Length: 196
Image 1 (cartoon, rainbow, N blue to C red):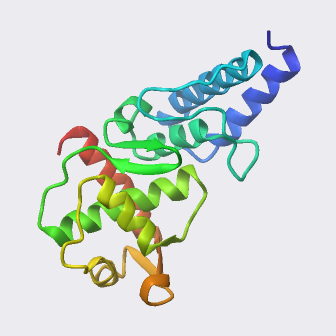
Image 2: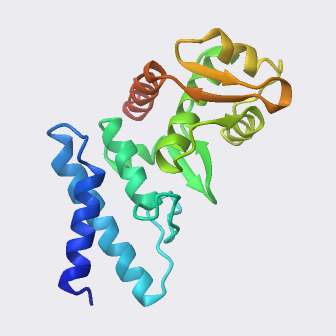
Image 3: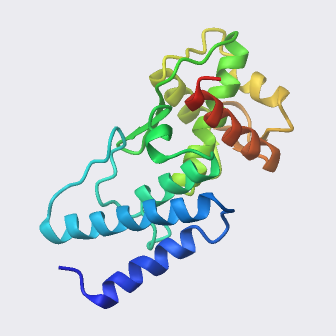
């Protein structure tokens, strides 16, 4: 059973997680995050591994210590103006690997840019990892059914300099989203979830 101090701590964490959100998403996000935190707490106490929908959350803690994958997933959903269930219709996370499970249309370049935005924003929000190696992005895309047949992923991302930043060269190159790229990624995930 959760004591009053533990409950207050979970409420504080949920409140901090949504502090930057706007209404009407703030209240809904708070409820979702608090519920997840309480369920995770009770699962930990019982020694039971918890799985939510298609997203493997367990009780892993991420680098911030106070937040967990479930909390950050709820934050990503709120930023995309979606529920967690709607987000899980687009993205799954299994063993800390991101996979896109919706069909992305367009030519190879369009598919790769769209998928890369989704993968990068998920890693940034859920795992607090801004920069990603090209090889990691390619692996997420491959798992999502998006192949790099022409081996031009880096070229496609470099052409979109308003969305992506690059550092390094060759196989050591890394990418992250710009501010405009983040906004575009949230909109892209929302559109994919809504079938637009």
